[in-house]
Image (cartoon, rainbow, N blue to C red; front, side, top):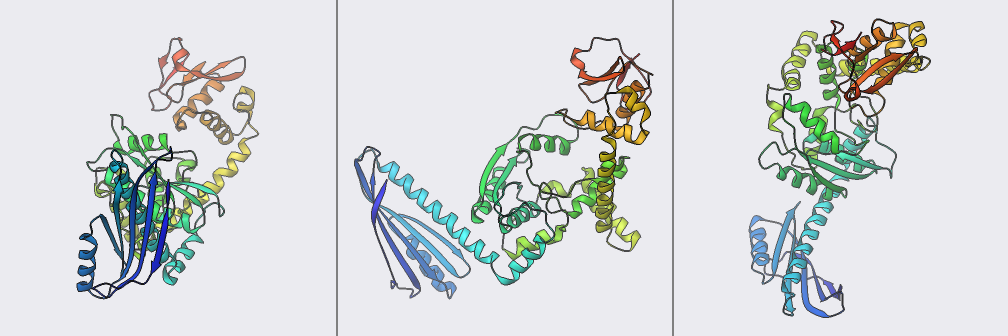
Length: 434
């Protein structure tokens, strides 16, 4: 509990540049009401006109008899001194802890004041406003969880979400892959607090196996709240389209990420997120794995797309993003048309157009919490079961589809005790039941 008095007045000093001086005398008491000590909090704001005066001001702060702290930004030095004047035995540590908390509060608020003031600068505000016109954030006042790694894309997501008027929680997931990764969480925390957003740090364990990138992504999304927004840009969308083409994906894969609340920056370029962070003077984290050619996405980013731009004689990123948008719109139409097909009714599947039947089956298999959708080979095996070629088949790992009395049913493969033999339908190595 705090009680006390404060004084605010101009104050002279040897450097001739102390503009404002604020003293707060706080009487500390225990929850029981017992008096435990007195704390003096001295806040000062210094105008800096030269390096010599800056050094002198810092010396004045650091030579104080209490807990000194100084924060310098944009020609202004904020200083604070927290001094324990009197404490009763057994309470000194709690008073010192209070002093550290006050210093932390001033650090956060001074950062917040600086960053929000920069965001209101005409040139910065104009840039942010123009970017917002191409974003798909929810309405002002809505709560939004943002996944923020500390890179320029996710930090720009955080900045623009706050600028859009959302109530933002920045969530940082530490994968524990790199030594010193906790520093990245601290960076995100400081930026979030400086913008007036909430912060939540989480840690995950990466399972063993191939494809580190996929395993890290799976672990990350397993702890992020549903609907969490990510900082994927138009450049990420173009890379996803190229990867889908290389894998032989169909329309859904080429449609890539869907624009909306979960992906609000898909119409923003990566260079624009970097520019926004630089304009605000924000230091972001550069993930060293982003330059490693051991990851397929990096090879697409650094080699394939530049080669395509060179061959096309133009920037292909907007073209690929537009292609993804067209595929998404047509995919949505086919999904709507396939709603007339009952994926569990053998007669309905057999009588439907094959394209719509495949979509109905894919939608059915994707429902629930199976984790990820089936590949094309799995869908074809289910069609074979519906057409009477087999009695059942494994589709998604852990999911078995069987036919009985004209009805298709999904079940857990752990409960299947039927004799299965391999079949050459598809290349996934799944088995079917004759």
